Length: 61
Image (tube, rainbow, N blue to C red):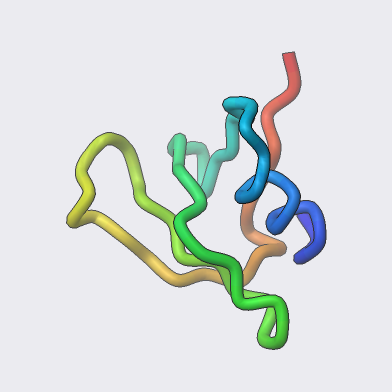
C-alpha cells in the first residue's frame, strides 16, 4: 500500500479491512513524511506497531 492510500483509509468513515502479515489491523496514525503507519493489531489497544506502509495490505471483498 502507498502512504496516500493509508491516509485515505485512516480518514475514511467506512470500515476498510487492512492486514499486516496476515493479521487484521486498525490504522491509528499515518506519518506521511516518513512513509510509516502506527497500527493496532487485533482488538487489543495496547498491541500497536509502527511499520512501513508498504507492509500493509488492503483486503478486498
